[in-house]
Length: 310
Image 1 (cartoon, one colour):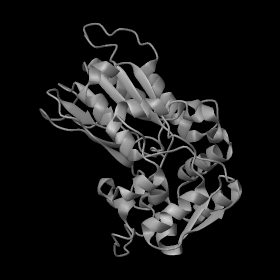
Image 2 (cartoon, rainbow, N blue to C red):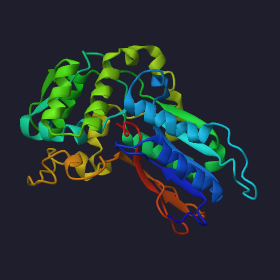
Image 3 (cartoon, rainbow, N blue to C red):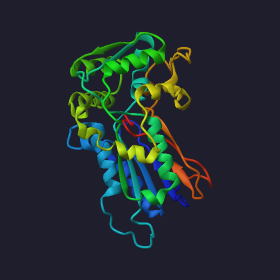
């Protein structure tokens, strides 16, 4: 991978089986090649003390950017300014990772024990990313934590999903271990079962029903210049959805095929990025997700980190 001439990197990490050391090596390569600004999506850092695999992975990756580094001789930008966009559960998660059950079985299965969930729209995360890329120096060495204005209940999400799919969706609340069993029956790899079950355990912890979970809502309001999308607004914004999100909705029915009617992780080495970010126009070269170089006045595209994000 060549990083020569790259000045801005916008990086999203999808759900994947990996350790933080690979990301650390990439960050160090960026520093040594004089990258001026590294922008990364992440997950809600308040979960840092909880034993959730995905949170630990994102937290370890973040430290590669935020912890002080020794200067690199001869490299002007050895400190490499960063911006971290940290969000909670993305609203795209049910559509992407429970798509087959929603489309075919008309069931939304959770293990949140009826606790409120801090869902964030991937569209808001994308808008925030555009703001940071377009006016990067203003956001150097900052960590933004995104939340919605209040919690959503999964039973309410099921009602919204029914409108989206144009059919009744049954919300089924089960226990944590039963949820793990459901995922294993879908032939998901063990690492992804652990991550997805971990998301449900986060919900069930009850943390996202506390006011402290929404203390950072002004971060996202500041960056997007308005109120964050609620779940219904996200589902109504079909023009911003990826093919995976939109598949099977009331407005787009895709013919079943092995690549669409199954969870995408069965057909790819990495799970898809949730949501997408659209880059701003810049005179400098940019690359998305740590890819190989961009072109002058090019845009960056990336996803969620949130959970994906999730």
